[in-house]
Image 1 (spheres, rainbow, N blue to C red):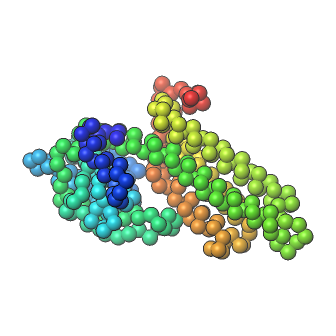
Image 2 (image 1 turned 90 degrees about the vertical axis):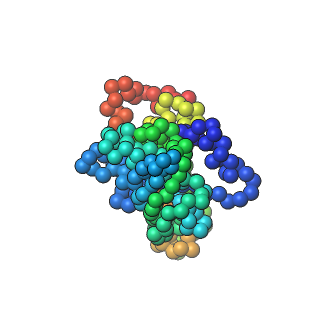
Image 3 (image 1 turned 180 degrees about the horizontal axis):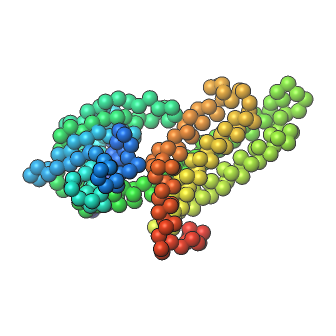
Amino acid sequence: MLGGTPEQCGRMLAPFLKKSGTPLAGFCSSEPGGSANAASPPPGEGVRTFAKLHGDRWVINGRKKWVSSATGWDRKGADILCVVCRTAPDAPPEKAISIIAVERPASGIVFERAIESVGHRAHLTPQFGLENVSAPRHNLLGEEGGGLALTAASFTGTAALVGIFGVALMRAAFDFALHFARTERRGGVHPIIEHQAVGYALADAKMTIEAARYLSWRACHAVDTQSPAADELAIQAKIYGSETAVRVIIDLMRVVGIDSYDHEAPLGRLLQDALALPIFDGGNIGVRRRQLHSMLKRPDYEPLLASGAA
């Protein structure tokens, strides 16, 4: 949608707009060994998946990891894989990397393993190889060599959504902890919500949830309306929403006490899911804070732009 031509969008998105079927797609950016420095110039490795033109087809070789649903239902590949790869080995990074859409069926996708993740247990994030995977030349998305900018644009919208993930997890944890505090006496006379320490902890959690919710909502709205503040707000929502979720859920586990460590309670599972939020979709330390830092250094940076975004 961001880089495709009308023909590419019409052809490749059609299966996803039908009322039947279960098509899958994957954005193949992350690689084994990490991708935080995708734009690193030599001697840095940057993107290590390569694509070369042979006649009118791209031939792709490399390995990818942490790509949602990438190997499909049968481990032979999703219906569409948008592969971030190096297409000009000797060019500077901002002109060397492209995105190529690989449509199923495509031979050469080699499933290596299903990652045993701590949380998000129903989510398939495989490690796999691309061995001479072929795609037609006209499946290049956007401009050749423009893959870094297109990748960054793709992750802007998803950054805002990570904040929403965090809000959802915090809400679920809060609902459980509030009910627990209202009904449990823990061997005492009164429900534990009557104690100030518990009441204050719940109040602090609720205020934090609403703050994260509003920031994430503003970020999503800015992305939808293509506001000039969208990049900054989306990254802020990602960082704040994800890190807040971990902290708030741990605080609510303190309210519940040892029973929060029992899987009959949902808090442990919610925390396991929340732990991924600061480190996936561009880790907060390796990627997201760097992006904000770069914005702050720009001579044309306007500090109040995000504050005034409609």
